[in-house]
Length: 392
Length: 181
Image: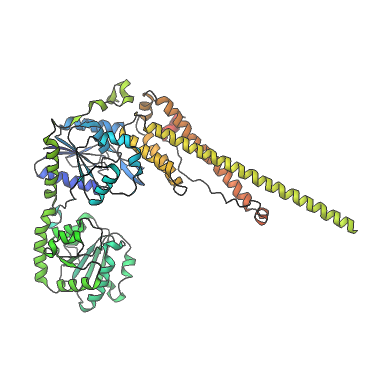
């Protein structure tokens, strides 16, 4: 299948949507599809072979923050040229309600269009205000995908209509093998945590409490923490005698994240609530780390009710301490959990997720007469008609 | 010195003081009026700028992404509460700059039927925001100084009027304006 994919945010700066587009595109290519992505990018930016630049992204205030977007006649013309030359069977636009190339592509194309909605927000007055502009473009979308329940809820509330839920995937291969970080495990005593240190619902305080309970009896036990937040605040919650057994990495790169998963004997996800899908959990499982997680419904499901990872009572430090101690003292069980986790996580691999996305493509193309075409009516912006349009 | 002379001198002093105080109070009152007028002019200029931006966003002369961007920023500015207003108006200035500073944007807009008028109106609106904000902030400065004086504070000449605050926004005009002039 020939797929044209549109990413509204600049390719130069890593971000959630950009990573999603990249991983999905690569999974589809690996599956034998032809994929071409158009995204804002500096003209001299190094781009993978499947990415076309829609022009330089400009930082502009949008929806309360500054986003790097591409808009204007120049980008519109590039999108149009890309559409014409791509001869796509289906056009897949990400975040079409953002004023960038996604919206431009919806506007300039006719045919089977699929859109994925990522963002969830409470406040999106802008969305309803400029409804006329948006509506024309969004009405052309025949299949809608939401990446999370929250994104789906936003969509239903602000635009009406429903969407199918297809969550983010994990590129299992990226985490499967990595060199452990120097000075860390796995040596039988390292417990790991990854996530915002200062966000209570990620549950770090519960883990620190549990660590303080079991560490005095186990001299080899250490804690490895990665994620944004203030290290001083974290250490203040640990008794002084135990502080040198807590390692704080702060923000880590993608590579170091994979290495961190390979440096632990138990990976702990003590989230109290809120995770619609434990992406961090899935990554740790892909790395084969034995997992110990709170028994919130999402984690329970990902871990196969405890088959692919141990569970403790959500929010209960005593329960966490008990389970962690049991796991640390039982290398055989850790080995079993690790093997089970590697097996269970395949369900969340991008290749599986991409298959669901292809099903959406097939659904919208099955009834369409042809592929994606350029919408002639929008070919020349009214203003430029007098001078011969896109020749500039 | 007789008692009569003393009474006379005191009387004259009291009259002089009264005249001085009422003159100061009158001045403060005039400053407050000037401030109110400047504030109204600034509000009018901001509303006018928002209106022209909305018209431009709805003009179909732009691509939909640019339209949406401008419409969103305008809407935020128009609906912002007093606390968020400076922030929202600054965002509108930035969005407008990003839109207007596109390559050959003015030329392309000028080619549309409504284009030349819109461009002229926008230039005026943006300039008037800059001017009226400067005048308002001047008025704020003078008024604050007058309110802070010993006499005004002791005798509460300003009454219950609050200390006016400056209106601080980013209102730099698009680069294409500067090139023009």
